[in-house]
Length: 525
Image (tube, rainbow, N blue to C red):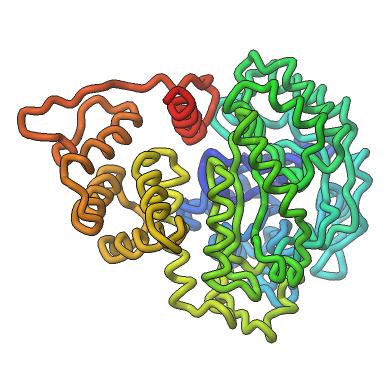
């Protein structure tokens, strides 16, 4: 089988789908019949991927490169150029759009398209396949495409995608803010797709069975009128059991949006809210603008008056932020009761303006993807290593929704101590877990429960039966009927309880279902 153009990327996991490749395919026009999308995961052996690609005898292989697949893409491209040097390899994506000239991956590839490639890739393929001509320069760049002329990619989500994968959608591109750790800070303005046309595309996806939509707009609620128009559209169809994810500006939640989201069923909306830091000096350094009082008010509203699932982001390692400043911000955010707090470690995205702080704040990053911060003037290497583990254990215990009672017990312990905080309480538990487990990944759920039991009994000196009872309640909430032996009250005690009814529609992701269950139980107690 021969396919002239292969559109390729390596996703982090199977459930993710490549939005970018579908845009490229949608805009190939008459070349679509000569092209094919092939997606793999980073877990796949690069030699197997190369074999699969070259089996098609392609003339052009376009590869989407991101921070999560940069290293694997380097291995793949190296193989392709060794095995089939006559095959043109064209790179695109955020990881190769900036600082390209010093990127080893770009040196190996034949060509690199910088920036939005919707039309640039099509023109490259046309010129080569129809005229045999190639660009004089390796690096290809052009003006931003007129967003109203870009053909939408949604029809190219397959039935398999709709059934088993995340569907990414967008109403706009760009961001008006200048946060220096983010590549969106390089955008000059926000450009909007035609909203009625977009909503018609969403209707067609729903007609095909789509129920989960992840909006990748950087600032979905920037325009209240557009935001309300889209929310009203989905609210009219919410009986289908929809789940919608949006990235929201933290301090921008006017009355019309508030009143609208109150009407959505619990768990059907998820808001990703980027806080990043509560330290105003640090925020100023990295050009982050937030009205923190409005942010607090919005979180209180979301927690008290809506069923929105909130996912808030904090970044460890920003210039000027030390561990005590971060701890204070973490505690402030935790008090506002988001469903999840994503503790992210700063990454140096190629082209991001945060590099201007490298000298003054002694910012040292890993030389390899994902280019995480290793030390700063205010956070040493050991502290950042500890926070790497903190992030992973926080995700396993708190964000997962599986250990609600256990996490609440740590919060209660902090409240019982003078001058103590929830952050430092979990920090102490993180130290225990770091000593008990050689690594913070690949730990089974049973081992997580057993570790929590040992921590409560041996390090917090809880009575054994009290600790077992608390963790048994968490364990039963997972839906498992039979308790593991170490959680049973005694040899003759039978495990009780059964699968909890989450009250959420079956289309909600499992993690959101667990948080919704916890909220329901809290409200009824």
